[in-house]
Each structure stands twice: as C-alpha cells, then as structure tokens.
Length: 336
Image (cartoon, rainbow, N blue to C red; front, side, top):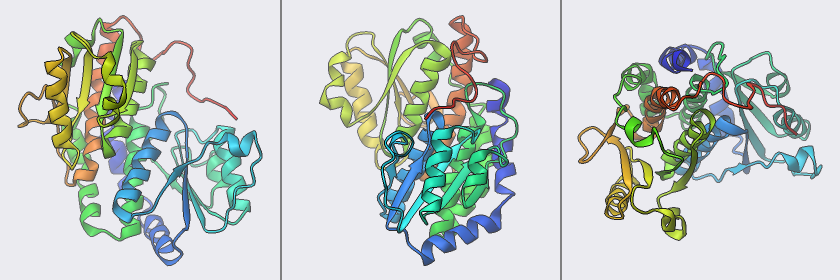
C-alpha cells in the first residue's frame, strides 16, 4: 500500500502524457452534443473519485449529475431513458458486473458511455464507447491508493477538456510535482490521536467531501476504526450530539469557499472538548496536518488524499494491523 501510494505522482505523470487527443475529442463531443442528463457509475473508492468529478462538473458547468444505483439495472431491470444521457464509469479493475451491465444497457440504448479504468482490457473497457485508461500500473494492494488519485485526476481532465479550460489544464500539468511534495508532508500528528481510537468523524464540504468519504473508508478498511464522513453543514443536523470531550475529529479544510466555515467549525469542536486534527494549508492557524496547495483550488483535494494515504498506512501498522491484507476483503469485488 505504501509503495503504491508513493507511486501516485509518477502514475499521474504517466496518465497526463497519454490520451491527450482522446480527452480533447471527448470534450468537443460534450460541447457539440450537450447531454440532457449525466450519470456516474462506480462503487467503493472509485465512487468517491466519481463524486469528486460530479461535484466538479456541477460546480463549473452547472450540470446536475446523478450517481446511479446500479441495482436499478442489474436487479430491477428498470427501463431508464437513454436519450440525451451521458454516463461516466469509474473503476480500477473494470471487472464488476454491476458496472459492466449498466454501461452495456446505456450504450445499447444510445447513450454516450465512458469508462475511466485502470485495466484497459477489462470487460468495462470493452463495453464503453469511450475509454480513458488510468495508466496507474499494477495495483496489488487491496486498499486502492494510486488508482483513486489517478481517477480523480482523470475526472479533472474530463472537466478541463469539456470546458476547454487552459488554466485548469496547466494546473494539471504541474500536478505530479505537487503530489511529489504532498506525499512527504508530515501528517504524523494524527498518529498519537488515532492510535487507540475506536471511532472517528471526518469532516469536509464541497469538493473535499469525497476525500473525507475515502478517508473514512480507509480508516475502516485498514485501521479497524468506525469512521464516518460528514459535510460540515450536515454535522449540525444531529451528528454533533455525538461529539464530546476527547472525541477524535479530522477536519479537511483545503482552500476554497468552504474553508472559512470549516475552520470556524474546528474551533467550535475544540470548545466542545473534541480532539481536532485540522488539515489545512500550512500557514493556517492551529493546523496539525499541512495541505500542499496545487495550481488550482479544485485540485487541492487530490493533494489532500496524497498526504493522507502514507499516514493511514503507518497508523494501520501502529494499531497492529497489516494494511496490505485487510480482514475479509479482496482486490476485485464482483457484485450485482
């Protein structure tokens, strides 16, 4: 897991060097034939990369994006209308039937179908009309790391191509160098707080919320911590009642419109006695986990994840777990 997390900057560099024309042509197609509805198709960590992409599309393009409940197609055989539809499937293996079958259904129905997948020879890649390989290389760890970062990068490339946004494309071109710094960021302050924790909340908003969800999944997956992700706004609607003296909370506050509210929330949580771990740009007061800024605010969540993965791998080992062999899990999950 650690080796692969550290390989993510190189994986992103490999991806950015490939498929430049394909992204350009796909972006031109979406501009020429604007979809009337948009769907993401994904599970697990890949779904969080899909959520990041969806939020980016909604924020920058003003187009609503829905996450498909795959059972509508695989179990209930719902006759979803395909006219004007574009689908975006995200997967590391591309092998799970609950991604392949909906993509086949939508393509046969006339939708624009795309797959952002690490295995370019997978069933999902064979089914989709447009295929964008992640170029992350072999990922043997059950806990996905570099493939998730590669999927988020691919989602940002999609949006940059769709908008024909030169500034975002330039920021993406510099992302490997930024991630190479982010992977060495010192997040060790989290270790003594979380070494004996049995529960944890991970808080973010906006583009950072998918990263909070991925972090919570990794805490469960490799550390055995019952971690849950919440929007900073949703925390006020009930979950705040959980938080008392000594309760551990990880607040992810990268740059952007949500940052001020998250910093204020972190202060409120400290006043309640919570043990707050604040991830924010290094100059931010009371920051314990430094975030490495990228060339675009929208890409900062990718940097957060790059710094998070080595920390959670080390935390797993300090808690007596083997992060490379999570209990009861397999690399490829085949569900319907």
